[in-house]
Length: 513
Image 1 (tube, rainbow, N blue to C red):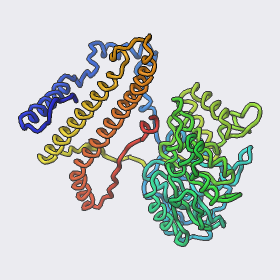
Image 2: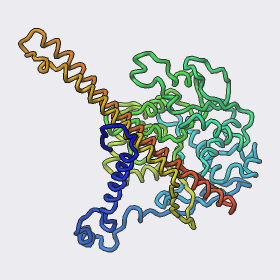
Image 3: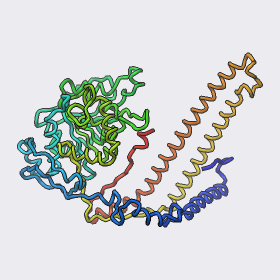
Image 4: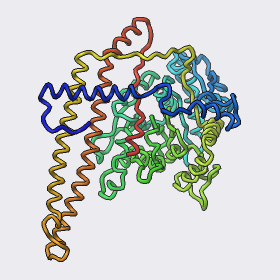
């Protein structure tokens, strides 16, 4: 998007500008040969030569082709009158080669709340999670901290319902305080709904108070907070200022010897505790790490379908026993699993071994009864891309939006140009001064200070402008799809189908800023 020299209020000028933009897009699209997008003439020859060079011949397969899935059913859990999960579930073929440990935990829900089982409020797969999580929580790590559990189920398995079932089981055991950490405070209502669905009607579900210094008077219940809320006051700058931390407020409510559930829903929000880029550690990762250290007897569950993509993403999962005393990666000279040196040693050793180390970690955790990772089966599912054609009004709206951002860009660049000229006018050489002049040093200091301000201003402008530009058009284009989505949803509902709408965004780019 280039600069313009005047206002875009001339209809002919607007039309010419939009035509140029359309031609630019069309030319670039036409220039791409989709049969050979790299433009290389010898791609085919390289592909033919590759198998011989690798020594694999026709047997060579990609990673995607190697991945297989096996039908999943609880291997060792038997609950009387338990209903099967509404949809078929599968498990990664490699993970399916390892059997979970024997069940030693006696499920209270089965005996004290049999209607939950009989009515199918928790399916057999969901009851399996509650059982293994409670069984895992009965043991301790070598450091004395309670062991944790990792729920890596995919979408559709009802992770929220499973966490609610775990809280119900602990309420039946007499534990009245629990903490549920999630991504958005609006999900507090979803947590309350899941708890009601499993029969928890008489427990208060509440959020952190707005005042970080306020005392929470609730003597029992489920405290729902967000990662961003919990991490306020955890940064080094906030600590230096003496800002009241939300983490302190939360720990005070939990009290000494807290042994309730500490549930990290969508726990991948904390995966940048040990970032690859220096200075990339997030406050969320720091807060999750610290609260586990402060509440060693808490019954921790990490819950995410996308929690781990590389070894360093395990860093905040200090309760899994992958490193520390009594683990394959102990701390030299003592220390426990919260030692950064132990975490870094595990990450370094795992990264040296590549994807195989990640698979071994998952197999080890399942064998230890610390991991469940199921997902819905897509057998028989059909995939179709539906085009949402734009109406004339939507096209007009998009063109006007593009013109608006063109004006914003031009005006901001003009303002920056004026600032640059003002800074340049302060240059001692522009003023005719030389280093020998008495006024040179003071003039140069003023020029240098203003030049630094200008540089910071320009960097901030570009970040704000293009960040807002991207968010604006993403929202606009998403909105354009809604009418077609509503049409498809209504048709599906008339056919007796269920409709699930997903908005995918990993948030990884934001975390790495």
